[in-house]
Image (cartoon, rainbow, N blue to C red; front, side, top):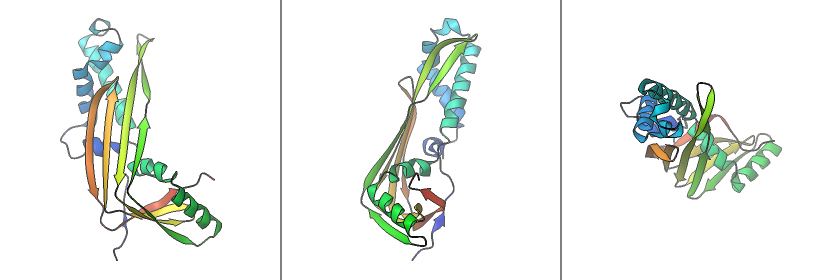
Length: 197
């Protein structure tokens, strides 16, 4: 029997950019520049000088980078919180203090979509909204979950594949797919709440 490992936050940024010798803001900025998404939105290069356009691309990239701080566990937990078996175990452990349940889930997929927008202003005048799309999906081979006090306290899975993509105005800025082999059980610090009330 293995000892559970406590894991710190792993973010969408880690999926899209971890292990690369590049700053995420710079990579997003360069991709925005290559795609021409910002000048197209503000009516062409005539509305912004070269330096002005690059400054806007940098600010948009910084906004997108903050979006990438989303915690993967929070995204996965959002999907698990809708799973009927885990919700039922959460209700039972809430109603019976001190109890614990082990729930086994077969192969499953969790998807998370985010569609924020960044409004662009030139000289204080709105010129358009840059439409963003962040997609994250999890393919979990199997999950053995421990539920206590209506919280997911630890999880054991042999393998999980996480895929992420970031797009702006229909142009893909970054995408990546990672395979995680999770040895033993992963303890979730304070647990993940499975019920809203």
